[in-house]
Image 1 (cartoon, one colour):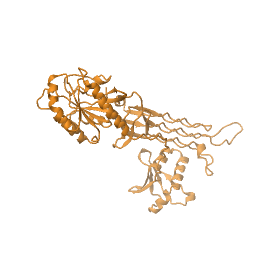
Image 2 (tube, rainbow, N blue to C red; image 1 turned 90 degrees about the vertical axis):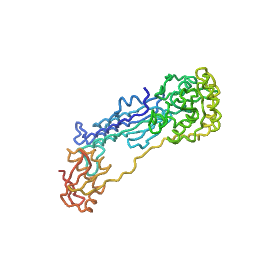
Image 3 (cartoon, helix red, strand yellow; image 1 turned 120 degrees about the vertical axis):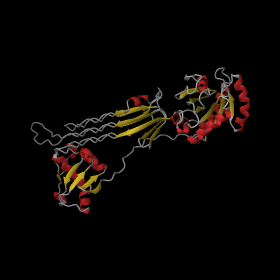
Image 4 (cartoon, rainbow, N blue to C red; image 1 turned 45 degrees about the horizontal axis):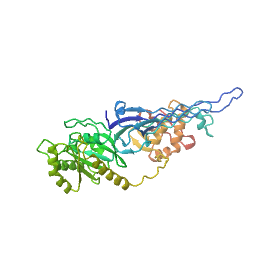
Length: 437
C-alpha cells in the first residue's frame, strides 16, 4: 500500500532527575554531597533510509516516543543519556510542523533532522554546591522532552514524469521501458498510486514516474487531484502521454494536451520544465490516422512528438534517447551541490521572564521560568529556596517592586499543573525569601 502523507505525534525523552546523595564511609563523618546528574533525554530524528518508499507504518503507528534519560546516582555517577529515536523516511520527504511551516526537505540517503529535542537532565546535589549552600539536600528534576505534531509528505524524486488523462497508456509505457510492473487495465483510474521505473537509454540512466491520471479540475482536488500533483514538482522533464485511439469523439490529442497544461499551470511552479509529447497505442490503425492529423498542431506548439506502441515495442528506443538528452541537459544546468558542513546549532537566547499583573496577583511566565519550575521539587523547602534565589538573580524582585507589588501579594510562577504560588515579601536582598502557599 502506497502512503505518501502521514501526521505523527512525537515526544522526545525526558531528562533524568538528579540525585541528592551524601558520601558515607566509615571514619569519614563529613563526606560531602556526591549526587550525580541525570542523563539527557533522547531526540526524535527523521532520517532518509535506503529502500524506504512509503509512510504506511506511520499511519498505523502515529505516536512515537524517544527514551528518557537515566537518573543520577550517588558516588558522582551521572545517569546515561536516553537513546535517540530515529524514524526512517523515504528520499524526498518534506517534514513540516502542524502549522505548515517546513522544518526540513530531506533529499539523499543519510540526510537527517531533529524534529523533537530531548530534555536536559537535572543537576545532582554535587553540582549545586556553592559557598552559601555547602551540602544541598536537594537535586533538580529533569526537563520534559519536546512534544509536537509533525507532518511527513513524500514527493517523488524522478527525472521524467509521465502525465496525461486517465487510460492514456502511461502505465503500459513505463512497464515497457523499465522493470516497473504497474497495474494495467482498459478502464480509467487503473493507476491509483505513482510508480517509479529506472530507464537505461544509451549511456544515460534516469528514473521515470507514472503519475495517476489527471482530469480537469485536478488542481482543485477533483479525481486524484492534489494527492499526486505534488509528485511532479521534483521532475526535470514532463512527458505528455496522449491517446489518439480514444473511442470518444469529444476529445482529441491537442485538446487533451491543453487540458493537462491548464492543470499544471494552475498548480504552479512547473513552467520551466521541458516538455515532450508521446502519442501512444500506435499499433492501432485509428490511432495512426488521428496522430497524422494531430502531430502538425502539436509540433506547432514547439513540442517534440514521439509515436510509440508499448504493446508492439515500437518507438521506445527513440523516446528513451530523446528523454535521456533532456535529462542530461537538466543535470548539467543544476549547480554543483555545495559540500555539507556539520554546524552546531545553539538555542536562541530566551528572555528571562515576563511579568503580568492579574486580578489575583502577579504572574511570572516565560520559557526559562517554566524550565526552572519543571526542575524544582515543590515538596522540598531547600529546592523552593533555590528557585527563589534563581528568580531573584533574574531580576523578578526588582520587576515586582517596579510594578507596585506589596508585601503579601500572591505571585504565580510558571503555567499549567506545575505552577507555584508564593506570597511576595519586599525584604532586602540579603534576607529575602518567599513563602509558598
